[in-house]
Length: 212
Ligand SMILES: CC(=O)SCCNC(=O)CCNC(=O)[C@H](O)C(C)(C)COP(=O)(O)OP(=O)(O)OC[C@H]1O[C@@H](n2cnc3c(N)ncnc32)[C@H](O)[C@@H]1OP(=O)(O)O
Image (cartoon, rainbow, N blue to C red; front, side):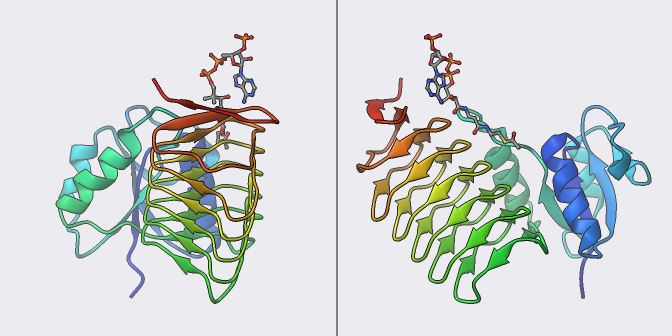
């Protein structure tokens, strides 16, 4: 049975998710966010102003969708994920009908694959990771949990990316590179060398630095 959805958050990221869910014929029972959204996609959906209100829905009866966006240095998104998983909730995996996924790719629980994304054969996407609009994840890439691959980034074949790493919009990562955990690849950067955990890289001929 397809369980109805409770959405956490109602900002821009949540609205894209709601759009995909409705196109995929899901029912969104409620949205939880501090302020009631004026976005049309949420207009007919019940609103709660606290995440505590979500607990009134039994974990057996609903699935959650993590509608919080993710930018470098922010941790609320995965903290919320961990809090609700500890309370026995499951997060729905959201995949746009307009994404192209190889049947030989593996998509982790609660991950989100947006319009125009391409995920090739042998690729593995970790739990809770966002593959945003127009991202290319080439064959045999391994992307860890709670990463965000932002719009238009290209990850070439066989790349490994550790958990909680942000690959910003328009970045390019060449084939075979390893990027550690908690890294940031800045918007438009080109990565040609391995990056250690907790490092950041900027620019066309990317300088890799320790994160402060
Ligand atoms: C649907 C959606 O919208 S999802 C959102 C997707 N968005 C992203 O992925 C963007 C993520 N953010 C980035 O990539 C940012 O560039 C970051 C986080 C890496 C850097 O941000 P900050 O550390 O705040 O840099 P800040 O804005 O303070 O700039 C510091 C300097 O670096 C420069 N700089 C910042 N980002 C970059 C970049 N990507 N490439 C080159 N230079 C940069 C700035 O111009 C500035 O230079 P200046 O000192 O000469 O003026």
